[in-house]
Image (cartoon, rainbow, N blue to C red):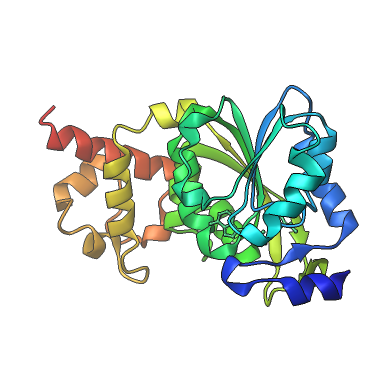
Length: 267
Ligand code: SAM
């Protein structure tokens, strides 16, 4: 079976199919799907995770780009219970999530090339998303969950942790997939948090200030933020201009964003 999956895998769709039952069970155990859930699975592939989700009797939407996989998914799931299971043969980045009922639970063993833009797209939906369980490159999981001072701490972690809580769940070695990817993977749970989101005056400003702050990791904040903050403003905000960007907490980035937003609006 593994050999067959490896032969049929299409590289351009980032296809590494899960073949490790223990990992599949661990993912399903962490999701704990139930009949009350509305779940969207991104990239179901040959249905490794889909089977367990489907068995929970949840309302299930499958989004799969590869049309070669469509007949199998229709036969195994959609055509059996079209009322509670549907398939979109589309690029998930182009799908309008407004069409789905909410709150939505998102599940996916994601193709690595779309994981970051997809997470940002999902987090923009705020309250519409109940939680997200995704398999990513382990290095990306580490960056999302990194804390200040760690080398993995950067833009991705700050932006996601500013609006959501994150929890790495399972480490997955290459042998769990066919074909095996070149790197380790990991499953992470991300729960969007309306309270955190409400504390941010402008996502646009936060995006801008975090991008600027981390534009040159080895340089000081004074250097990276010189077009945005004066020495006096560093002092008023209680930020040491000699610090490197990875020293500031997520909360401090949010405070900085809100200060700049007030300044821009002359409040
Ligand atoms: N869930 C399956 C598993 O765990 O065995 C397959 C995972 S494989 C890493 C990624 C899946 O996402 C593939 O089925 C691939 O065709 C699909 N895919 C790739 N790009 C996609 C996109 N932009 N939108 C939707 N699905 C996509």
